[in-house]
Length: 466
Image (cartoon, rainbow, N blue to C red; front, side, top):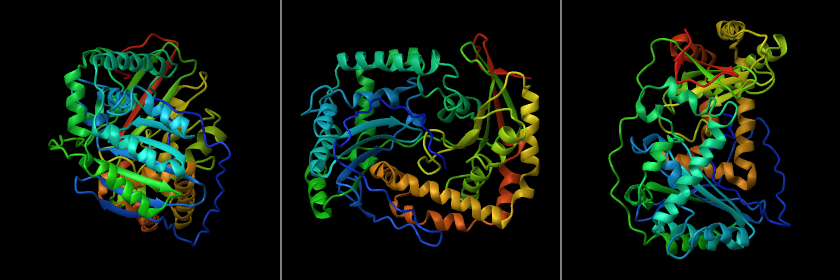
């Protein structure tokens, strides 16, 4: 359930609440239950609203999640969802270019935006008494953007430079978070380059931008959460005042994003002239979201890759000494809850050049071959404790940003943000027998894709290793 840091951010303002201290929360004991306050309702225009009070610190989060990510962006416009994320800061009816950013900064806040598989999100963390200002500003840009050729051309350049810096000119650029979905998946919606081909980014025009905004950036395709120290009735009044008169849109039919079942192991090699060590990533297709097997995979993730005591870390780092950086998880661009389509569980590592690829794979296969022998009720209980601790950290950390993320995700994808309070119960239903069945179905070679990075070589396209 590890939240990866490799997102697609566009900016982060550093003026973090001078003099505003967040109190450290005590973690619940093993018998206590998560209880996050949740009030959920919808405006007449379809906007989903989630309110969650937390008076720990005098701050408030405003988060808006739009139900459009790079998964279903236009086929001839790869990277468009991310490009549009940038356009949201180029001006609206009452705020000029980058004035949204200045407004947050001048009011002592931080903000960011990111593009993920199934949503694009924007958030602000501000002193509580500035909550109304942030709600007004978010509503202003939901109502309409300043879409001009100058703004578009400028942001095309910014995004293209971002691709060059973060991927094309970076050691291990795009590995494995950008690369692996393209190798492991077959449905275009799950397998295309979501950062964007440079030619596709150049091809975007004003008509594309206006159409994308009109189609997807509508209240009936969004969730708004307010988390933190605020008055409930005041927040409801402000939300109704600023958002209720924004018209809904006619939403398009969703494309088929299902992923055909993989029937044989896939192996690929990527050459990287900037890398100094070989690297390897392994990916498995996940069970469908919210199924018993899905929750079982969440616990197997804990057992296999989360923490120094995980099985793969024990084998590859401590016993064999091949690497010092095994890491992985479900959904490298978020966590196991904030997506809705097909997903991969994967892990990756760099390893000593004196160690062969075959030696690393042999050690991995030893762990996977013995995995079912490690599955006891005690192992399940330990995994639940680890996951529960991570979940509590996510919900309580960064002034409640993790809480806002889960609430918006559950509202968008399940129409039920109250799920945040039932997660622990779902994991407690997982038995050793279910874990073993999940291993037999999902953690098998025929469901596995292996991607190896060869260092100090010119880059090639997707090249089967064998």
